[in-house]
Amino acid sequence: MRAIVQRVKSSTLSIDGEEYSKIDKGFMVLIGITPTDTENDAKVLAEKIVNLRVFEDENEKMNLALNAVDGELQIVSQFTLYADCHHGNRPAFVDAARPEQAIPLYEKFVEYCKGLTKNKVVTGVFGAYMQIDLVNDGPVTIFLEVKDGKVL
Image 1 (tube, rainbow, N blue to C red):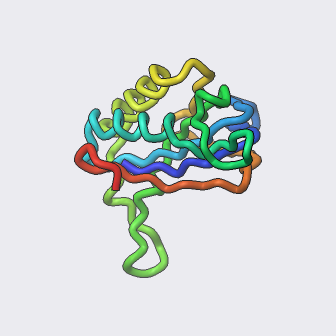
Image 2: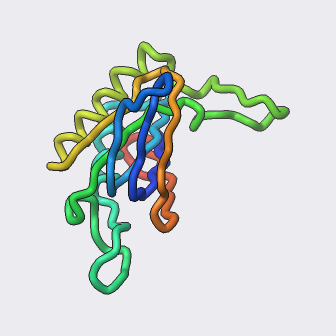
């Protein structure tokens, strides 16, 4: 399971030109799922993201986690995180989980995140064509990968 975590000042997700979800300060998370991912991987990744200490404290050091700053979460499915570009210039997505496997695990990941924070958690729509307007804060962008219950 892979995630791109962006610390944002705001993020707005639109579908068909209509605002679908929006957050203020927090994380916009792109999540990719592969066929070997498990619910435990989803739990480990959710815990890692919610507890990432990348928000500035009073000394301007990245030392605070999401809950300490009342940060919000926007979680968006992103199968392209498993793009294989080794052969040629057209990516292959054979390592991305099929929707029938990915959707329940994505929903479980969202559920774990909601259980770990008291703040707003919003999503996109799995498989929809979406546009995301965000203001990356820092910029801070972190790549995370979990396999077999371990953060790589």
